[in-house]
Image 1 (spheres, rainbow, N blue to C red):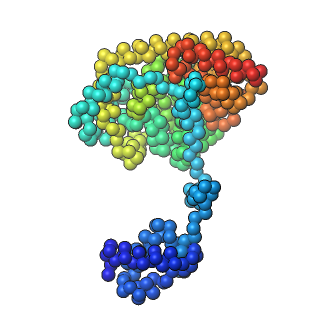
Image 2 (cartoon, rainbow, N blue to C red):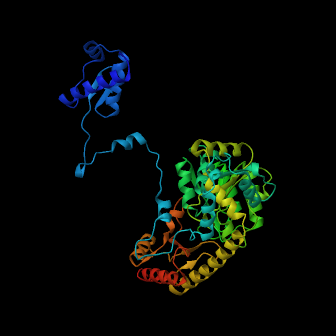
Length: 462
């Protein structure tokens, strides 16, 4: 006999036998089981396979099947899962930097970190209308709604078309796709230093080695970028040329051209992360609008300006790189949920979109000025890297002798949460830094109170 009921019957008989034996004891041979019960070799093999999957039996090629040893337990009787360390190998996905950015402030602690604005009420109303339409829950084009791709193409500028765009699930997903598509595991990727921790984590998860390229108040230094390409042999450079996170620097048009020239000479790609395009009135044209060589892979996300859970971004690319990006999206998640795409398309095409942008810009300017003023008043020993024209963050250099980690911990105890500078560096940091953000506090008054608490923590270290 060789059917499911026979397999289940033999498995049940073997379970009883396992219960009578001790860990390490050998079960009867397959030949003996076949003889006793009149079953086929396939039935015996599948029955033993079930017990193996249940953890009751281990098989040793050429030796037979044996009763599994009881799993070791730790304190409280929990199973010892340390065996997984060997099975998983030495590749590590380090989420600590991302968790530090996404974690909520403890009760009573004022958040001076985080990078999201409060969700728009008009966006919620748009989503409610969209979700009532049955067709909004149908299958979208696999690369994204045509009109939404066309809208993102206009944001990219140049001669981009809807065919050059791919809709993905947010900027972080876009980075993951881009790193996997453009570079092979084990190869170097160049990044600005400091850099966005989510990009550093995505590159590491893709098996890439992040190599730092220094920046100044005007962004990445093209001459050092050229040297880094020559020394490392890298073929990918990741950057945020507009309102760089965390420093707030914006590349000039001249430097943008120089970066493109350097990348073209190196035969390399530039991943342009334009996360902050809608967080300022003064965003220059994207680098991809200057690119005639297919060097730039452009990422433009709506999440920062609209809502944390609107995980939606457009990725522009041409040539074989575009094909790889589309393939990566397809095999990982098929497509982005159509209700999100419909909601975004309806919102950015409505009069609510420019009104929303004006309100965001005004609020960000107010909070930036209040934050910069409070830092100057309450932390006179610290230095703000620059005060950007828009964006979310201020990058603060601390006195050299300050213990950055101790300050962040002391500030939290004192009721203010800030981002430690260490998580923004792919290699050794040049000194203690913190990133301070003005968007998560309830209002300007709470923002100033948070800086006052931070100042008290710093004073205790001076």
